[in-house]
Every structure is written in C-alpha cells, then in structure tokens.
Image (cartoon, rainbow, N blue to C red; front, side):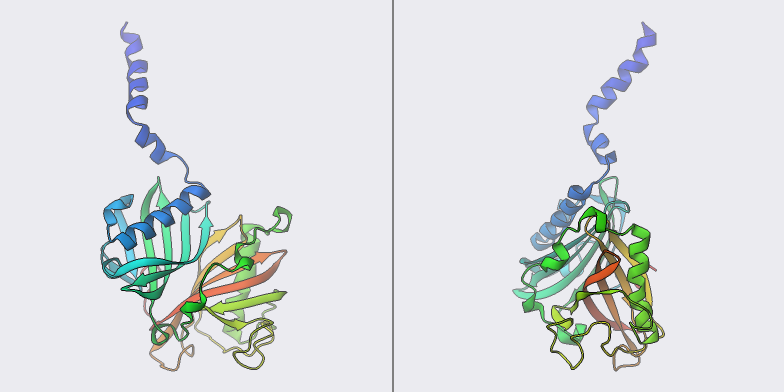
Amino acid sequence: MTRYIPALLVAIAAIASPARANAQAPCDRACLIGFISQYVGALVARDSSKLALAPRVKFTEDTKVMKVGEGLWQTASGLRGYRQDIIDVRQGVAGAYLVVEEKGSPVELVLRLRIVNRRITEIETVVVRSAAEGMIFAVDQLKAANPAMTLRPAPSSLNTREAAIRIAMTYPEGLRIGSFVKANTPFAPDAYRFENGRLMAGKECTFIPGCNDIKEQRIPTLAEITARVAAVDEDMGIVWLRMDFGRGSVKDPESSLTVWEAFKIYGAEIHAVEAFMEVMPRGASSGWD
C-alpha cells in the first residue's frame, strides 16, 4: 500500500497548487499585454497592491531607483487614448508608450516591464511633462497609436530578430557619424519619424527645411551616442532602442538627450520611427546599464 503514497502526494500537490502551476506557465503575447494594462490600471488607481510583483522587483523613474508607489504613482489621475505596445515574448518584456494624466494634465510615459514566472521583476519608466523636460512636447497630438506602427507585416516580410536589430542599429550609427546616407540606414520611401508627438521627418514634415527627406535631412554628429536593445517585437517588426545621445544633443554641455526609439522594420527597411525623449544629466547611468 505504501508504494502508492508518493504518487498520491504528487496528485494532491498538483490539485492544491493551481496558482503555482499557472505562475510557471509561459507568458505569451496576450499575457504580456495584460501586464501593461494591469500596471497602468494600478498606476491611475494609485494602488500598487494590484500588481503581481516579484519579491525583489526593481523600479526606476527617470533613471532613479524608487519604491513601487513613489514618483508618478502619487500623482497619476487618469489615462488618455494613446498607447503603443512593444511586446518581446522571447525576453518576457512588455513595453509601451502611453499618455497619462497627472492632476488632469497629460504627461508622456515610457514603460518597460520584465516578466518572469508571471511576476514583474523589472519596472523602468520615464515621465516627460513639458518641452523643458523633453525639448519637444506635442502631447496633444498623441491621440492613438499610428497605423504604420500597428500594422502587422506579412510573416514573409519580417526580418529575423538578429537582422532587425542590425538594421535598427544603423540609425544610431548614422547619428554617430552625422549622416544616415554614410551609415546606409535603410529607410523605406514612406518612412517618417515622430518625437514626443511631433512629426520631425518624412514626406509631410514641415518642421525645418529638408525634414521631408528622412535619409538626406541634416542631422547632428553625436560621437558619444550609446544604444541598448530594450525589446524586439518579432510579431510586429519593431525594434526598441534606449539611446543616450551624449554631448551635443542639447545646448547645455552638462546635459544629454535620452531617447526611447521604436523602429518599424520589415522587408529589410525602416518604415517608421517613433520616439519619446527626455533631457537628462550628461553621463548619468540609466539605472539598468
């Protein structure tokens, strides 16, 4: 009779621990999208107890390490309609650009979550409240995600993860040497770039002369630029880079422009570029380096 006891105990443990079994299940695309919704819902409710947090979760806002519940958690008051998700199933990363209300006023929010065993282990956020903080702040133009970014490319046109990263990295290389032409950055004919809600390059751009040609437009030479891959959305053809532009990106020599830039890539070309950015002290650690 005793030989059946171990099998019985295993069966009882399986029945008694459905939550544990669920926690170990892979977090697919829908699961990761759900974590973004869970996070922003808890944020505007100012109730972090609603989150499935790992015991040693790390949280930063504007590169500063904080406790979950501090920073924007104390002032967020609502959500607006704009949301652009960037989902990296392979790495368990759920990223988003959002517009959140803070005491009734709109602010731009960059959100990166890392999910392990269906628990949030990393929370990286950037909050941009004004043109003084972001150089550009056309937040009222951010009504909904751009159709070019939400378009699902045909599977046959998607590049491999590695190839998409290589294509995206030609963009910071162009900035490093001061020329997208010399870097051979492969922009599609319809390519555009938005920065903090404002159209800054592409056929309909009127911001400055020449901005209608994204590849040929005049750009600064940013020798100090650094970039890391934050996420790759292999289903949607999006590579997300976190870049520090370094010296020369803003007038103040002690400051630098930190940029979260999403590249829509398929057919070996960049079709769209969308960025949220913030001025930060030059040389400051991101908190995740």
